[in-house]
Each structure stands twice: as C-alpha cells, then as structure tokens.
Length: 110
Ligand code: FES
Image (tube, rainbow, N blue to C red):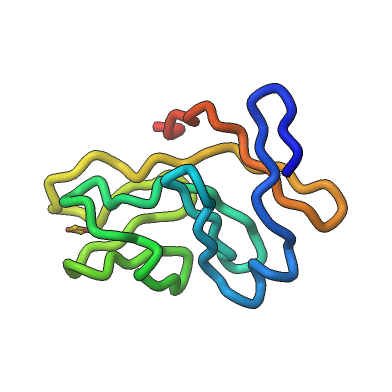
C-alpha cells in the first residue's frame, strides 16, 4: 500500500461501489459509497462506540447498528436530539481507480 505525506491508499473504487462500506485495515476508519460520492469516517460510533461497519447507508445518512440514530455524511451531524458529538470525517482524494484518505481530521463546516 502506498503512503504519501499523510495520505493513505485504502481501496479501489470498484470494490467500494460493490460493498458500500469498506473497513480500512490498521486504522479504525471506514470508506463509504454515498450516492455517487466517497466519504471517509471513523469506525466507532461517537455515541456509544458501536461498530459502524455494521451499519447501513441510505439517503445520505449512515445508520448506526445499535440505536436509531444516524449521521449526515456531509458534515457528520447526528440525528437531532441525540447526545453525541458529530461523526469525524476525513478528506478523500481519488486518483484513477484508487481511493486515498488524509489522516488529519476535517472539522465540520458549522
Ligand atoms: S451507539 Fe451509535 S447511535 Fe448509539
């Protein structure tokens, strides 16, 4: 696997389109295929640490497998009313067929 200045290559686009949620080995992170876009986020739910790799993606949201809450994949915000910090998102870059993630955390835009 290639690394360059904080970016790690995680998987190919075809695999992500097929699987929808891919675990990134060695980092507790996920890449998600979300309505034609690639999103990278932490794997542990920020509410009570459920494994979000077991969740599901619908209509731009990642649904936690443990509770009824879900996260907006644009900014990580949890469903209104749930006491939780937002889901951490990470910058994504695509070169050819390969997906890269920058390990530095992105701050939500609001
Ligand atoms: S553990 Fe994910 S919403 Fe509660």
